[in-house]
Length: 329
Image (tube, rainbow, N blue to C red; front, top):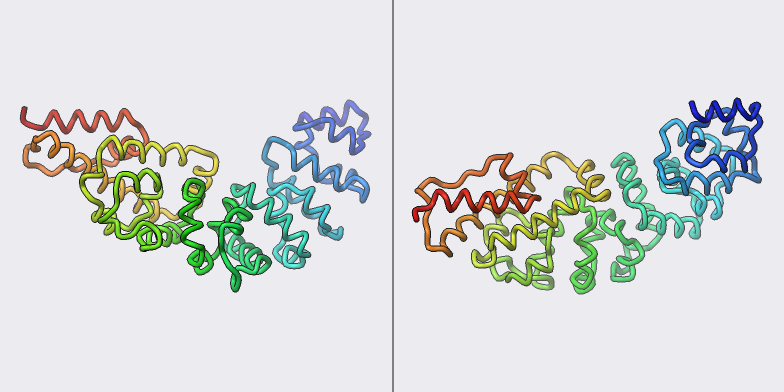
């Protein structure tokens, strides 16, 4: 509506430069007007403008821009000028025709902008990553620290059989970065298995408090069997409070929220179960350490209690107080 008012006030005279000067108001442009503005000379300028807008483009606007791109030859400069919202919405057939330089640009954009990638259909995510893996020769080449750095947060989007080949030494060295990435449903289980390999941290029964510090929220990727094998002496309530708070901070980040929206419900349910197991074990340890015993009833955490404990330090303190209150003095 606001854009239409501006257009009328300007007697429906619109140039590309004036359009760009409108900033976010220009998002209200109708497709016929945009088509009239998009000339060979103004195309790259307009793409760069839409790329740099601090707000998300609405679906009809993206569709209009992409329809206009159907009538031009996409070049290296075109890809460089496109934002991830438009680039990942291109037809796969167009992306498969990208030159090596264009694919390098796409990889760089993908590494810096994983959230728009997570919003495209899963099938397209998989097919697009196949093209990336092919371009980087990861099916037959090495998946080392160089590739981890190049792909950045997109390194976890490669097929499982590729990720399985990552150098364990390089993965271990880069855990401080990797633990903030968006691991999909199956990739979480895969990494959980990899963490217990001898080349990583070995069997979870031998882990220490320092291991938990290094893994941070990645501990929730372990299987329930491996979580049950964790030494009781390292499952201190304050330690778990830190891990749960870290998970909550990640979940509330832009990437974390987009990642969780992309997950299957079964994966979220498994996370809940693992958190419940850890909390129940930690509360039991607290009783042992303080040489107190519960009234004989096993502690059953409600969904509401666990949800709060997973991310709120006050919930941990409340849970501890409740447990101690049920213990004989």
